[in-house]
Length: 169
Image (cartoon, rainbow, N blue to C red; front, side):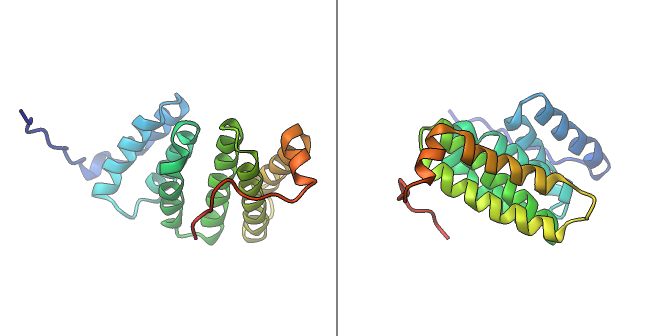
């Protein structure tokens, strides 16, 4: 028996509070709840950049268990941001978190590739961003440290490697 449940639409006046709730649920490590809230916001206000940013981050928060299905969705959410810097920076964040998920999953070669993608994007974000914002450099350095201090990654970067599978465009 199919139930007749339908989603309810948020009221425009509640969007700011809804964004705050989405951020709150991310902070509580409940990314699925944050994702759901963001999707409700975007149904009403598809240009809401805070919702796109929070949605993308909530999706990357889920990479440890669902990286294969969520990576493209996270990058697509960040592509909706209007600032060149934010698009580049948050896409780099996706690659960095993807790399960490690959490392946890035992896919060191893919982690190396993803860290390299993140590093390239953090470099570009640093050029595009405000001169007093250290975020891109700090994440860049974190990626370099991962590649140079993790024993498996350091060993593999000394030799040529092949990916465990192909990445799409």
